[in-house]
Image (cartoon, rainbow, N blue to C red):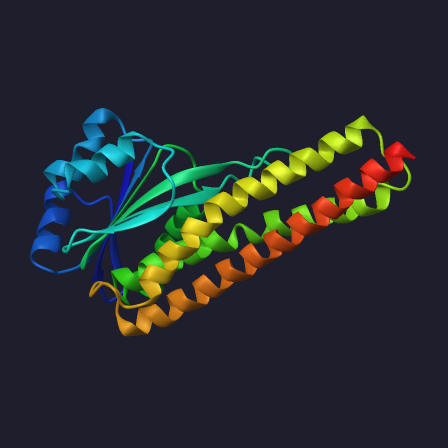
Length: 257
């Protein structure tokens, strides 16, 4: 499915304009286009090459999912791969869904094969108040999308903290094999999120440093704030990992005794 928005100013946002209308707006710089490819069919995926003329390697990355977060500069546009938390997965087994983003001067294209909560939230905000979301340009729109994506990690990280606190109390009362499995699962989840967050932090840092003319100085300040959020999350994950190591040692001591 392709869902698109064409903002032309004065609170006017056309939902699902024709591809030719979107192409003309981009070519003539007469508006901003956001096009979201949600579980696209092979025919719909041709939009990436036929309308936007994106590099074949980036399109290949979209087709073959499960890449690490990264950013690539193709002069006329930036290509980003980010990982959004799967908010339905819970803390038993945390999962993420890949989100591919193309950023140009007058367009943002997103592609994903699984539901991404931050994209759904952006759709609602665009339909409710397009002037606020799209009038400041594609770089601010990208920031709003990325910032929402990163903020969605915070409740997951908070849940992990509660699970660890539970373990630190439970270890003295019921340290059985199920308890040990729960600790191992927590360590796996923390390792997984940390492995995703580290390159994601570097990607946001690239956007905040002025390495691309597509990101204005005004927008870079906001990306720095998002980078600081990622930095805090990674610091917390490091603390959680140390607490789990101590918890595992306590379990082994009690079990041996």
